Length: 346
Ligand SMILES: Nc1ncnc2c1ncn2[C@@H]1O[C@H](COP(=O)(O)OP(=O)(O)OP(=O)(O)O)[C@@H](O)[C@H]1O
Image (cartoon, rainbow, N blue to C red; front, side, top):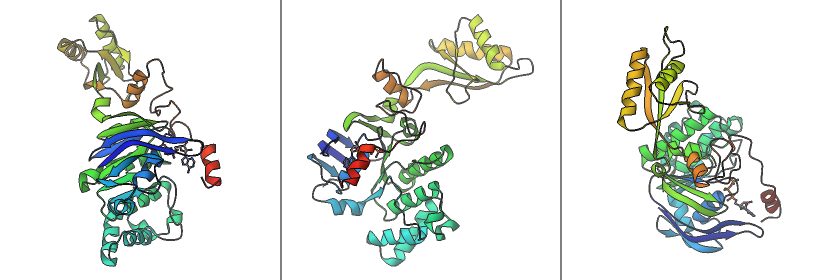
């Protein structure tokens, strides 16, 4: 779908992409990196909107340097920043974008209705966009990227500005773009954690350089750690504590799974072969507790980076590779240099 070879982009004072070579196949691919890592720059080059300083790139087998307009006919693009006209309705805007992509009037209207329904906009699609919430605006941006039935879409930070529920909804929608319509997706984010549930493949960039490109499952190998969760009973009002003591008596040390879903009720222990499962099962049964789950943990992507940087631990989960805090953790600051360049017309 996408191939770049030693692709570089230099601005007067910044190298946004530095000899980036990567191959991206069909499916949902996450492009992850901290603010300023070069994600938006890469997308603009792939769309033929901005020339590379060096190297080459192909999208759907087409050279980005010479076939930009053909690429844009076959690829959808959801830009990062707010760019919607406030005075028109979602329907008017998306029909307009469909017409711009070459659809005749009737199919532009039909496709618009289908696409807006697919992204979850119903009656509100007739109201002016200016009154929409951030989540609704993100859905309109997604709809206009899909309306001409592209083979591939580039989604630049589609979860930006959304609360956790809105983010989950958007990630579900993105997954369905591929599963329901067979459209391949390149989605950027600076939150490593959110990509592991959505993407088949993850490409990590840092300072314009490729850090890693792998299947998501390669990032998230299973570990030997077992997570165990049990119910409380009248006899054992704190079932977790009772199990911890019982397992200690049977020679198995545990620690609490703080930071995990259900933290405080989850015990973590090292599985020493099949017998460990039997010991835990017997201990739970002897105490008369209910076993909610006993599962082998997988690495989370953020943990992989902590390990790979060996010695360079990062504050909290979900941080981008450079260790700068992710936007979900603290509001991302505008890049002063970028603003200055923009003012200078850079
Ligand atoms: N038009 C421009 N002129 C000068 N520098 C630019 C320009 N566009 C981007 N840059 C710089 O290139 C680097 C990469 O920017 P880019 O927008 O690609 O990053 P990003 O990974 O998409 O991050 P973000 O999510 O913050 O946009 C940054 O240092 C940025 O300041």
